[in-house]
Length: 200
Image (tube, rainbow, N blue to C red; front, top):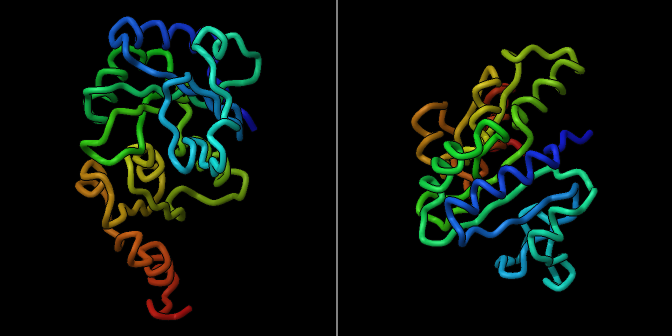
């Protein structure tokens, strides 16, 4: 299922962000493909989670060419220099929050890269749809998250857990689970099921 950002919204978002921050770089996720502007720095994994064994395999093109594509834009990414992620996310929300849903999944203080999906589309909306199809009430759902892009999902779930290594914005609002390196999800799920925490 694809809940794409309308192409006119993609163009409007890019125009507003670039007017406010001329240095901004854009990337686009088309399902499992990632396209970005030439100066976008690639990591071992591109933003869609695909292992980049050869960065040349990722399509790089100037924004006008990227924006002219016809494939559905599942996520629009924007990266800016000289601003922290939380500050950039706040700025982006004020500039384009009427067109898209703005969030991020980066640690505090890191370089600003915001993630934008179609208006109203979050992890919570998809989880709610899945729960409804399975006949599971929100109160019977447990969810785990560590970054601001998980917040809506944790709010939806009857039991929303922030990992021990989570962004401060989550740790201050939700139940705590041990950190990722401590097997926090597994320990908590076993506890919810009434099983000993050391049981495989």
